[in-house]
Amino acid sequence: MRVTKGHRNNRRSHHGIDGPTITIDKETGTPHLRHRANPTTGMYRGRKVMDINSAVKESKADKKASVKDEKAETKTAAKADKKEVKAKKAKKEKKEDK
Image (cartoon, rainbow, N blue to C red; front, side, top):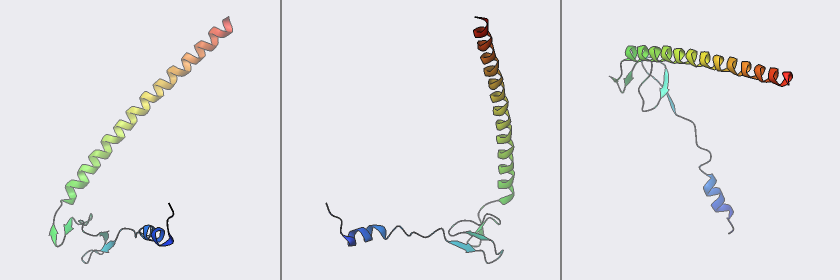
């Protein structure tokens, strides 16, 4: 079925969607997304809605935990790689002996 130029252009009219609207906070001058709390102050529409200090502490604890997990994963991966290398060497030695 043929799609006319008008229908095609109507469909494409939504392709030019703008990016997120960023607002500058009047008090601190920091940019933040509209209709969301300012991440630096925790204020939204003149009221304090989140405690920034506890959020920072939680994020630091999460980062430490993720770093520990990554270290553990790399250690286990290194051990597995060593086992694979040993197994390959053993196979080569068996083939050479035959």
